[in-house]
Length: 323
Image 1 (cartoon, helix red, strand yellow):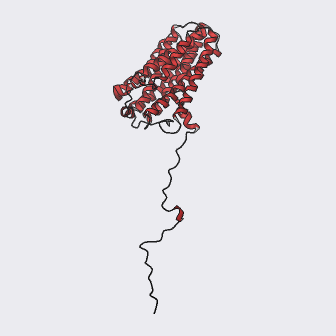
Image 2 (spheres, rainbow, N blue to C red; image 1 turned 90 degrees about the vertical axis):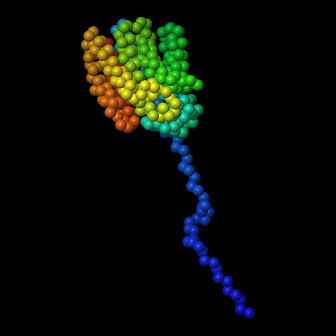
Image 3 (cartoon, rainbow, N blue to C red; image 1 turned 180 degrees about the vertical axis):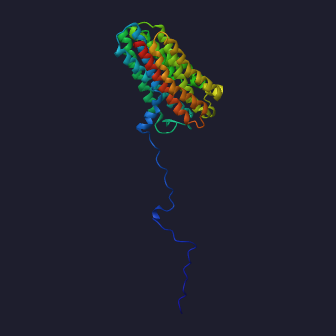
């Protein structure tokens, strides 16, 4: 009896190719990118650091009106306090805004916390480290001058820096950020620089302090104007969110131009102060961008130009007072 032949069923489709051990596996997502040195430097907001230098320049120049000897060690200590405090504020803002979700979508430098580039605890530790540097430099100033009550001033500065965006009710979320910047990065930084060097505060220092504070506020306005849409969505009620784009442009213009009115007044006694009008070149460019920008990213240039205006202005006032 013949054996029946069996027909092998034909395959319905083409035979699979490739490594059988890898078929059916889904590709793993790429590991999250970790923060590079460039990311950490960007999070320090280097473009804004001239704002920490300006009050020290103006304050040191005003001190030379009282004592013609340059107290350069004290001036450097004041600079260390100002720069470390500002960097600490920037990292603290990165941490606080990041854990709140405010920085989930941002234009500009990478956000370490909000962008998942660094662990929140790491960013917080770096912020506290810079606050510690500011505290040590400030303590050295207090020991050298013997003005122990200034420890309380330094403590208030650090506490105010933290609660700008930190804590349960940050005042930076209630439209008070500009007030903080004007007081601490304008008045306190400039007047404090003069006082620790010569033990008194001439009236010229107050004029310079107001100018430095207004330019610092202008930088903050440019930054918040760039982020106005994201801040609205995140519930961050900055002054810009509260008053709107047009009013912010007007206030920004006033804050940028008012220091030059002060410089013109000072030039009646200190003629070199007229040279500070050269800083109008970047200032007017920043104002033009703020009024005509189409993309938020363009305001990063306006912010940088305003910072450049600030340090140039401070350098010319230093020259005017020291000359």
